[in-house]
Length: 80
Image 1 (spheres, one colour):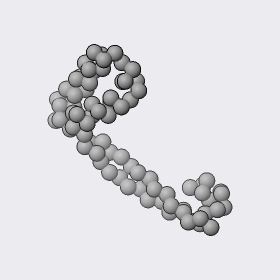
Image 2 (cartoon, rainbow, N blue to C red):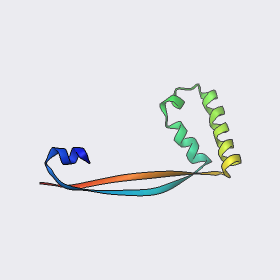
Image 3 (cartoon, rainbow, N blue to C red):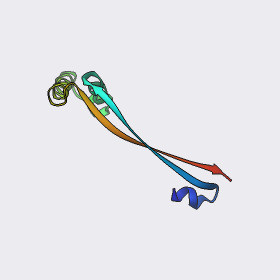
Image 4 (cartoon, helix red, strand yellow):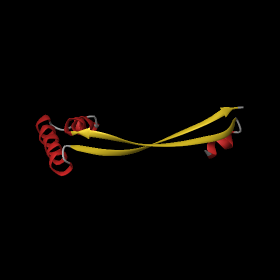
């Protein structure tokens, strides 16, 4: 917000915080991990084994789904 104010090109800055939760099943969590480059770089057999272990963790520890809390910050200012 200080950058908006300091630029002198915008009116008052409005801020909105939106909390939300995403629920991911075993498949969703595994897809999430697959998207990381460090997981993509693993040997295929190692990646498959680890993803299976992640899936088992989600099943046995979290009942088959993980709740992931997020907070989205939205800033809005009218240009002068």
